[in-house]
Image 1: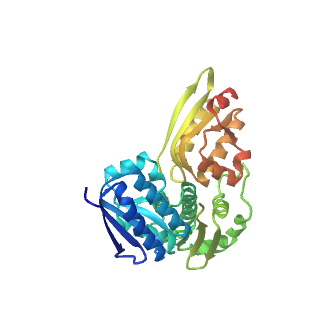
Image 2: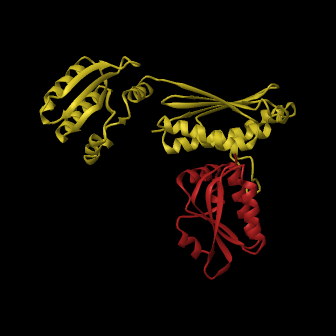
Image 3: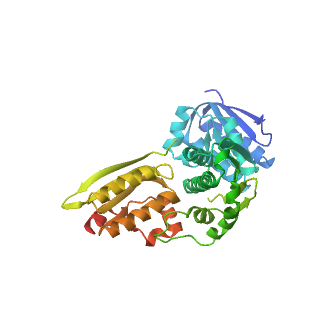
Length: 264
Length: 117
């Protein structure tokens, strides 16, 4: 049997990520070279390693155990080992041993490297969108932002809370915004990183409603719960769901800024 | 694009003035009018005891919650009730934050709510 080929390189896009590429069959005899390769990288303080498995034909259970041990060493140094590009046979072996519940597995090295920068390097992303001042546009906007949160590994509960916040604020913007400014519409900026999502939702203000909007802050103190009140709970709900919430209303427009922290 | 909501109706054995309504989808500001129309159509036809099954209600916002309070109030005024069952964790949190868990009658099991009618 041909020996396993091992090649160590740096990620093209993210130089702090070490890529160890394997080619061939990862059988029992390959444990020693795998172990020594990881040992060298860990000693060199390369804490985040992607195992490129795209040229691996098969993997044995002792090798999976060895990789788990390497990952434990990296976790102790606040790093990680993830797998990328696994073929179906390899995935089936990992699944059979429940190793897929231990390793994060990515479709390719680039996706794995992106994950590393997202989780460990404070990467932030901005998304800007705008839509006409019409209620029918709110459901797809809130669904879009929920999907962004889920894609960025926010859990279901957080994604739902973010969806609710977007929905309530956008509905208010449509309801209280200047009707004659429909074409200018409502602007939404989403800034998201591993730890928090910031939302900035702005719209033109109807001059006649500026004072009323300024007084809205009183609704932030105590949620309405009277059966006689079927409306007006939205801002109180947002206040409870968000970690920070500010409304800035002026003659030119209203901007609501919300911060929602990610919960594990 | 309006949110999708479907109401599915089911009779309750030996309860001629009661019905189960299964809410399927999202309840929000874009479809409350449709839901209000359908539920009030039932209430006005003499079906005053309504069991709202939320097992497949994925989402509700403050506007949707407002009409649930309205249904509860109206059913009581007509001598009936509006009881809710099978609420998912996320929707329950919204109801709880608004403080409406004390205002709405919420049950865990369908059998339990039917026996209470």
